[in-house]
Image 1: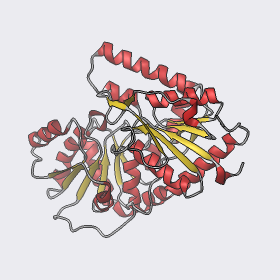
Image 2: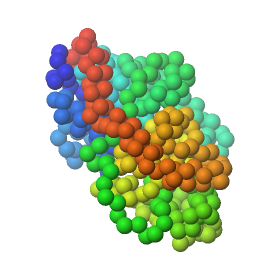
Image 3: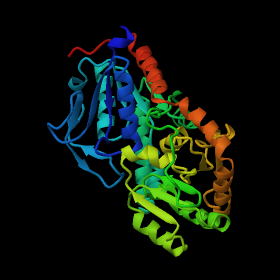
Image 4: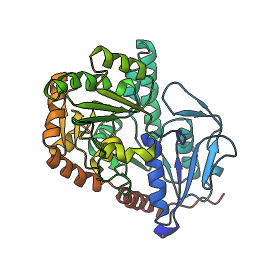
Length: 376
């Protein structure tokens, strides 16, 4: 088998019209693999009969447990994997689990990428101790069942790979989620309204830590009275966060963009002076890399996934529970914008979609080399 006749099935429990990091990762991988001649089939939730070419949709229902994650009503069966050489699962929902089991029955190699820390989401949902304990236990059991049936486990960052290996005793490869370098790049900035602009972009949910960003920004304005905080994204926390900003006296200094269409993202990133994230929830932080690819430096929560960026001189770190430390990290990133931005741009360019496509293709080819192709 040669690399240009590989047939790969990508499986996800979240898909368009959702625009989360998992969806964007899958779409970037699809495009990068297609450019290399790989035949890609996508299995995803969606309305019956509305799929585009190369996409098989499964009827599903919405769930309130996690945004954009849908529960499929029909399983993935070996017949759905006909003529597939490798199955790559991206979510641990019903479609993902069914695909792992079907691939095993069909004797086709199966890869799983760990994209989302569902345990962190559960801990911040305020569901009560008993419900939280039950959901955390279910998450661990599902991942244990998935991981020990895999041909390969993938994490987007080395710290996460180490964590997964310790937790599950299974070797983990590192393949970063690719950044579209043709879309996200340094460009002319839009005129500023005066002071420096700090940008936070992502879903407005408890695990993203926007409280910490707002509280830190109070201290930023003590040093930079004309500074603006731009917050992009939507989510269940929007009303509470707006009320918090008003209560902190930030009503005139915070701009709420709401949901930002993908076409507008490059301009939004490039027009900021500093990108800020107080989330310790990330497995990689695609928005961080997109900001860096745009030449914008970052002030980030001190956590294992972001620590390597600071060690490489591409970001400043802070403890989200310390507003003054957060403000200092944001202001330090502003002062060092040129040097941090240049190093961040260098790191982001090493994680482009083409590099990710090459890494995935190498993994798929290696797994498929000695595996029988499904013919029925």
